[in-house]
Image (cartoon, rainbow, N blue to C red; front, top):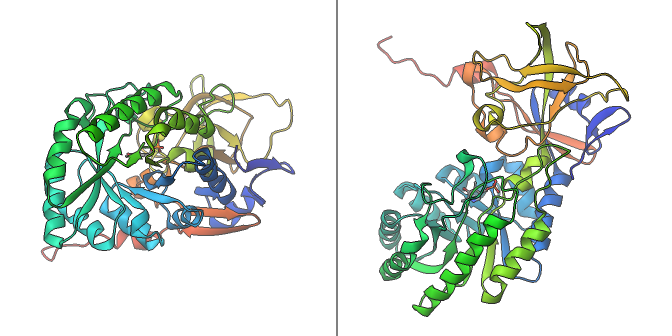
Length: 421
Ligand SMILES: *Cc1c(COP(=O)(O)O)cnc(C)c1O
């Protein structure tokens, strides 16, 4: 459920008509709903009620500091995957002891940054990383709590580009080698082994892969404890999928996911961490765009928008579907037409949808891409020297620009001309 609904014939974000925001900031823009972010975070938090737990929002999904601060205010920790994300979380006011550092290729500089600034734990993904982290910690005179990310070799049954838990994926260490790796970790002076980490992929629409992975984590917990490791924290990753269409999909609910965690791991008495990203932010954000032209093609009509693949790359990158709806509510029973919905960028891949049935639209009409809150703005670029588009956060009747559109001068002046030119 989200808070983007038609009211008085206009799509609203909470209590604000999107047409009003469009007039104020221009199109295209991203718009997030505080009430939806809050609701989704609380669903996870409540799903783990009664278990010692921390929900660490995977901030790579949508990392604007206003979003981070909203979630941190509700008690969220953060899962970061780079030094930049660590600094951004800290700038948003998140204390180091609520930040978990994940990622397959952390550099020594990134390790130093987080160790100096304070960190809850590192999720280590390889033996060389483990040794490097120990060295950096020893040099700084600290001991760093770690989990090791294990790759449980389960099929997450999701898009190949976002599956991470099969043995052919680059993530984690094979679970079959876990005992040897833990033995080495325990012997390294800069590390304190406290738990196990697993994350098998994103946009999972079934619970079964989680069940398989978490059972393996439960077995491993018992084996490692028997070998003398004090396993007391389990980081279970993110990955729960969201409905991208109103109609057919119904991914498992956070409550069902929470029940699965209790069932597979509850008896171990560990502190539980989860790292949802998409489910917190995905349906809490939309992308609003204006129709520039409607062009008649050969056997098809093109809806040419002012948003493009550089603003929302998911359709080009993952063949992702986004519902696209008019901001002005169509009259009931209006006859729909098929459009190829495209952006202005010079790539055929700059196509959001083909043969999409929509009410008839005209130049100047506004449309909204639903479910664009996660992996939307964060993956945008300035390709074609198109400015990064504004981000707006709505809170009841209020809205604020939380990232402004840069001017052409700001963009162009980032280049510097060498003196020999
Ligand atoms: C991307 C990622 C997540 C979040 O995944 P979602 O599908 O957005 O919930 C969590 N943990 C790690 C380690 C990740 O890389």
